[in-house]
Amino acid sequence: MELRKTVIVKETIEADDLGGACAPIVRVAALAVIRNPLAGKKADDLTPLFDLGGALGTRLMDELVALLGAAPVSYGKAAIVGVAGEMEHGGAMTHPKLGKPMRAAVGGGKALIPSNVKVAAPGTPIDLPLGHKDEAWSFDHFDTMTVMVPDAPRPDEIVLCMAVADGGRPNPRCGGGPITD
Image (tube, rainbow, N blue to C red; front, top):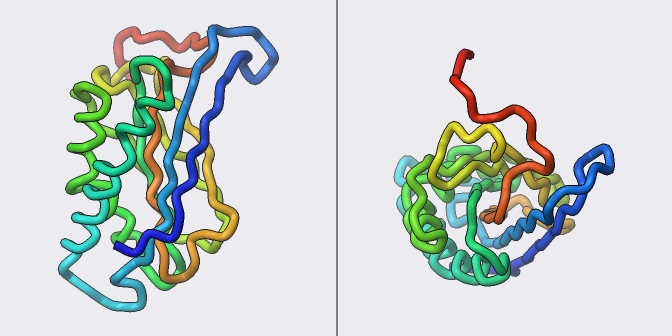
């Protein structure tokens, strides 16, 4: 693995978008910038990227949970692929093997881990989706954390993003009632 750098982002939310106070919500994200070994190549075998995603999850998730300072309630993942790669490269990083170390670090994880992938130039932000780790339909935990690395991804890189949070949205009012849509 050619890891160029890791960026850790920690935010504490103490009010909603309109300034209404809320109990503090802490979110922590890790953004790992790696060289994409498949950049510029048409490859049907994406196994090298599966393995990289799993290895980065194992390397970073315990640190994220420790930085959270409380029990994780929500989690999410995302990838930004440099322009010499393809969206499927991001999917290969986030799906087949990243989930296992994420679930191990949060102590469970019955729900699917929400994810987002895109191909973009350096400095492009991505909305990293968050959802409750055990209750897939907990509307109060549907959220995003916007993250970016100013100089990444370079064309031959991928930014792999993982996040955990100790709560849902500030002052949620959508509830967890019956699903009608």
